[in-house]
Structures are given as structure tokens and as C-alpha cells.
Image (cartoon, rainbow, N blue to C red; front, side, top):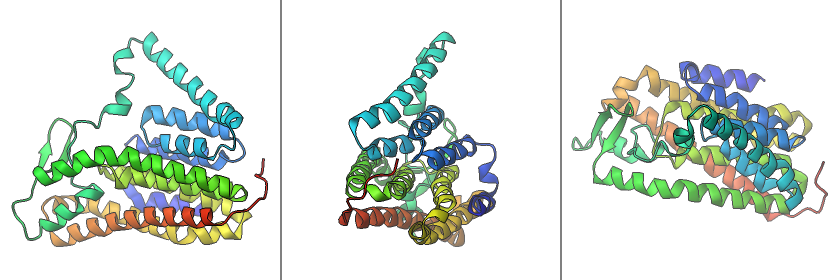
Length: 302
């Protein structure tokens, strides 16, 4: 697992002290077992999603790659429902029924966070436009870009994020049916695309979100010894992900004060990091489309 260790080192202290440091290993294990034990993968993904929404991307891809209704019910719906029933039951028993759905709605009142990918045009424009303001929200403890433009972008992202997630799931579904012989690669590509979409189309841009994209790359490399094609598919994305992780640490915590102040070097580092995230998402989508364009009739491995 050389990539996993390199990814953690590149991400640095961001990995420590946040829930994402717990979620990433859950996502990793779920993806490692997803093809051979999809019900276990769905159980892990659902547990993770009740902590923070990111592992829900894995659950969505597992549903999209199920080969038929029976498999969908057995490996996706039933494990997910069982975990959910336990979580809700424990919450009700502990008197927390009023807060049980907070994990799914706590981002609603936020504005465009300064580190978000969609905030890049505004942070770059600060280099010559002093009217663009960044202020600290002492309720949710983040720095946000103020103004009518950033507010409109934030509202658009509230719609764009779920739409992007559903469109990607549809692409994964179609590709899995066109290429059942490559369902393992499709599942990992789909998870990568979904997790990247959760970052690229998110109005919140917390640096720890980058921890989400390491697991599918690590899983693909760990499983890639079985397939030369898998190694070719994942080499450049793995390199790009390591660069993204390192640049993320450079922005936060190393140059965070400079980034908030609009200094040129820190702003450039943040913009390059965000551009690479978009490039990784586009690359995953392009690869899925390439697979979908060719059809094979080989039966899906069990």
C-alpha cells in the first residue's frame, strides 16, 4: 500500500483530528471488497454515510453496478436498510431523534467557502479587485466569499451537486451494462468520479475533503496487480492525486494566512490545486465514456 502511505504523508496534518480521517479507511476497505463482497461494502458505506455523507458515493456506485434487481435488493437495499434501522433505532432509544438527520442537512445555510473549487475565480480576481471580500463566519467557523456573485454560485451548487451525482450514477449504470467484464474498474472509476464531484460541485471546500479521493486510487493500485490495464488506467490519476494532496497541505495549514490575505503565491497554489481536482474528475468521466463506447459480451465475474 505504498500509494496510501504516500497519500497520507502528502496530505500531512490535515489527515489528523477530523472525521474524514476515519471515513477514508472505511471507504478504502469498502472498495477493496466491493466486487467480491458487495453486501459488506454496502454495510461499510452506509455506516460511513451516517457519520458524514462522502461514503454515500460508494453506496450510489454499488447500486449502479448491481447487475439485476435481485442483486440490488440483496447487496445494496437490504444491507443499507439494516444499518439505517440500527442507527435510527439507537438514536431514538438515546433521545436523539430530533437530530438524527442532521448529517444530511447541515450544509444548507452555508455560503461559498473560500477554499471551494467554485470560489477559484473570485480568489484569483482578488489579486486585482479589492472589492471582493472574504470574511469569517463565527457560527460555522469558516471563511466565506461575500457578495451577490458568490451567493449565486453557492445557490447554483446546491442544485448542481445532486444533479452531478445522479448523472454520474447513470453513466456508471450504463457503462457496467456495456462492459460487464470490467465491472471492477467501472466501480472504482465511478467511486472516484462521485467523490471528486462531491468536492468540485461543493460550495464547502474544507481541505480535509481531499482525504476522500485517496481510497479509490489506493484500492485500484492494490487490486491492479491482477490487471495490466488497471495499472495503465490509474497511474496518472494516482500521481495527480498525490500532487493535489501536497498542494492542499501547502494551502492549509502552511500558507493559509497568505491564502486568506490574497497573496499571489498562495492564491496560485490554491487555484492549481482546484484545477487539478477538475482535471481528475474530467479524466474519470472520460475513461468511463471510453469504456461505455465499446461493448463486450463476457459474463460478469462472480
